[in-house]
Amino acid sequence: MRYVIIGSGPAGVCGAEAIRGRLPDVPVIMVSRDPAPAGSPVMLTYWLTGKYAPRQLYFRDAEWARKYNITLKNGAEVVSLEPSAGRIQLNNAESIPYDRLLIATGTSAVPLPIPGSDSRGVGFFRNLLDVHEFQKDLADVRAVAIIGAGFIGLKLACHLVEKGLRVTLLEKEPRLAARIFDDATSRRVSRLLRDHGIIVATGVEASEILNRRHRVGGIRLNDGRTFDCQRIVMAAGVKPNVDFLRNSGIDLQRGIVVNDRMQTSLADIYAAGAILYEMLTGAPPTGEPELASTEMCKPFVIICSAFYM
Image (tube, rainbow, N blue to C red; front, top):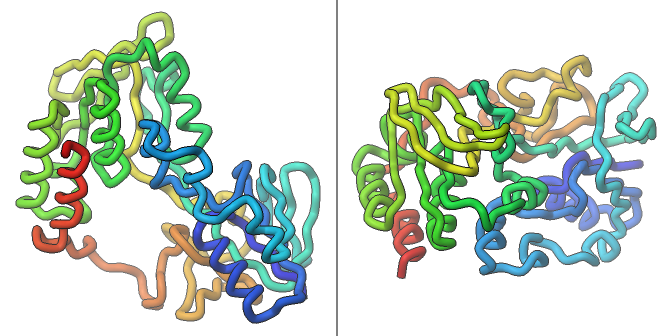
């Protein structure tokens, strides 16, 4: 039996370890477009501010693959899946056969169709390459606008203020982190952020990215206000990395549909992690997710406070 895993994030790595724990001798191949396995996007802001060394961005050490006898193919992207032949095709023309396949490709940031979004200085904050791009000419950056006040946007705003930058946090919903905060929690976090110099604007959308000589120079909102900035980070949501599955026959909705054993609609193919649509329930979600109460969000508020202690 040959096991192939697409993706080297937490779901892919834990899947590889689980397979190896039960089957010590079977071939396990992991394919990832990332340059290194087991990276943690959540830790990127800590590295940006110098709190963590680069090696601390990874939740497994450099010897992980050797210890578990995993064949790693980093920097390779899967472009198609051929279930009838039991193989995946890579962007370097290599073909890899499988007997069991685990898809754990995670998510990518959603680019927003805003006029001027092709300006230099507009980017995301999902991986190491994004951070390297963000840091270019950072000495000339005085202000940053973040579009999207979810977990990444909030955390990034806090860390950028620590670096002495002026930060504007923009959110189209009427409250911060609308899917997890209730009104009271959002107000409390907004107050905390404003008290430490962050401009918080909710219920607004970016209508134009202003540029000077093709570089970001500011951002205009749909209410007419403008803010000067030299960097813009789009953190307004993610989409599942499933484009390579479009013609594979796998049931896709807002992600990969699985049953309670994490099996997809095709035999011998499984999925795990953030790309799932129906996780364990077997039925599509209805309505909006239940909002977290103020009590449930106390840990997050404490974390926000800790940035300024």
